[in-house]
Length: 152
Image (cartoon, rainbow, N blue to C red):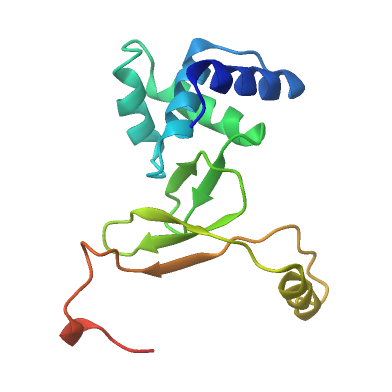
């Protein structure tokens, strides 16, 4: 885990490269994302950051998160119900999402180049610019009894 100084240096560099300026609010949001692995919602980020910066608003947190995503310092995980979670890890990895409590866990690894190329070929005229692999199921706390599981 990076120190506060190292985190702020990384943030300042990325913001500057994208024509943005450093603010303490952006710093607090980025430091929180960089130190957590829970993939929080904007509201959860707001509640956590507000403990250190009581005057911060939810709107500022939303704007800060979008700025971090735009600078490549965070990833926005969106879902069909229009909800979003934020990931401070930008290295290649996959996710597992609990369909009951909606917790998102990191899974190591990435698809091999040959697998991606094979998928591109099957996409026909669709231009592939990236991919996201997410497994869905139940976390250990939410897994239903075997009697309720349906096999596919």
